[in-house]
Length: 323
Image 1 (cartoon, one colour):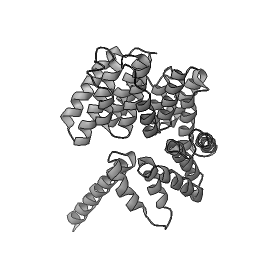
Image 2 (image 1 turned 180 degrees about the vertical axis):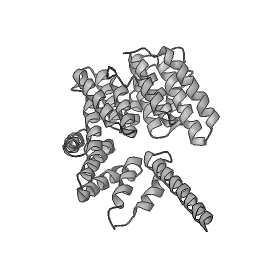
Image 3 (image 1 turned 90 degrees about the vertical axis):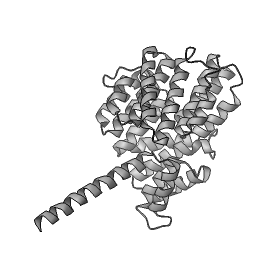
């Protein structure tokens, strides 16, 4: 592997492991070439997608200026820009703006060639926007999920994530098993297996622990902010196994490296529900709402609060009617 390939591989690996800030740092240090160069563009795309994962759409757009990378030259860059504008509109509560960007993303699907890395990026962007727009079925169709025939590893990873989020572990396992036949040694396959393991519990969760533990001990990442994602996975594996003290210890290590990591804070909130130590879950949840208002935990709790209020109101109306 030459030096250019090794740098791109490092950037991709950091992105896959959720080490988004570290990914952006490496991209910023290794994109001095022309954006028209395929290697440079690949790195910029991962950098911009990392900024989006950090909920920084303006920073993502800054990495991919249309003046340097016209839509006609790179539909993949156009897709990442459209997704950035979509996220920006959602953050502002601009429904018409997000709808317009989703429309633009769907139009780019005509240029998403199957089996092509840039085509995969387009599909990932469209599916991400659909998922954020509460359309998981549309997202899965865009990714080609349902037949276990996709040969795009990132599409499979996002598809598995969506399937688990809608409680279809059977279909997620089917997609993973099929992908393993052609990508068995890939890092992302290991992470998909670990993610399914955390959802499933039992022995699969124990195997997930080993995956995260091995990655966390990688000398290139151990003790660095880039290890926070895998440390969080390791902590969750402890939680699933009921090892709360170990989970708390690992989360504390992750929080020391990156105190504003939304997933770390979310898991600290969940763990705090089982203990009596300060700070309690409320403090962590308030911090999470500030850091990531659209985090899945925040959204789920909001939905449950609304459902409770609706049920309470109906109950009170029933009591009033019976009086």
